[in-house]
Amino acid sequence: MATMKSVQTGTAPNTVDVVEIERPVPGPRDVVVRVRACGICGTDVSFLHMGGAPFGPGGSMIPLPLGHEPAGEIVEAGAEVTGLKAGDRVVVNPQGVPSGIIGCGGELGGMREYLLIEGAAVGKNVAVFPDTVPFDVAALNEPMAVARHCVNRSGARPADKVVVFGAGPIGLGAAIWLKLRGVEHVTVADVIPERLETALAIGADAVINSATEDVTARLTELHGEAVNALGQPRAGTDIYIDAAGAPAVFDATVASAKWGAKMVMVAVQKKSAAIDLGGMLRSELTLIASQGYPTEIFEVTPEIVEHQERFARLISHRVPFSEVGRAFDLTLTPGAAEKVVVTFDGPAA
Image (tube, rainbow, N blue to C red; front, side, top):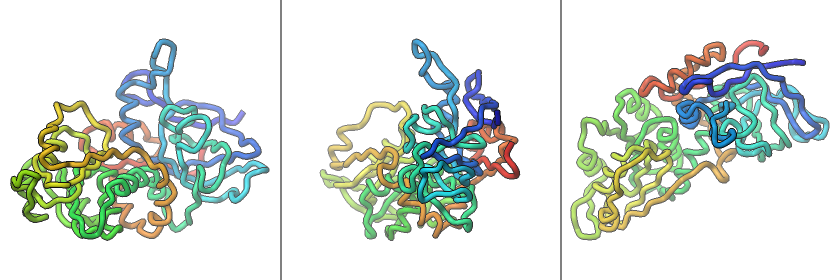
């Protein structure tokens, strides 16, 4: 029996285990992908904090296969598969397989040497990309689809002025999509100077260090003056995007929002204090939630190919699979990394 290595939540919280499991064999409609790169997401970190997934008897924790941002190359294809062949380089839709979401509660994880794609079909669960794109950049496809859906939900137009709170991968991805959409002015706010430098490098028009600067004053300086429904002075910002999930973001938005402004929440929300509904009312602030990527998962692929140099700047650390424990340690350490991608270089076991 051929085996391979796979990463799952560890026996103790905030740890991972690398286990030896059976290498998959494709059915007639399946393909096997040799994973060449897989990003680590905040969702993976959440599962590490919990110590697994509560799917065991009585809600007990069980080990969870990790990774839902894989890119790789097809090494085996079933006899009934069409449009795909061995050697094709592909990105994966982790929500497009019948055994559950890859790396988020399903039977399969993307942080492994070989990944079975059940019922493989182009446009459904895989998309092919050219060999001009490095695997690590291609592995950004899934999080960039999340960011793209957020921008789509915002309805941003070229004349709009937008602020993105949180210069992690999703926030920076949203900033890229906003600028590619032709949005006039995009500001990125964060508390980590290095992330703000990255924001400028990927095309943001301005940045705000929200740990040291008055957010409302800076937004007014950048986006002009406006008023809320009561005529009280506010910033001229049209759209606020929360890619941070911190209670302070909502407070800053309500304090700054003009009449008719919109706020889009794409970050996983941390426990927050009471929402200032009165402040929302005074600005007629529209609150929009953004979850996943109903249509965007492969819409983004050709644009990542076209603008790969810009997206590559989002990757702060490339860590070999042989050091996967260190890769997860980086993501578990606040402020230590922006985007960590695990690479599978050399022949797989």
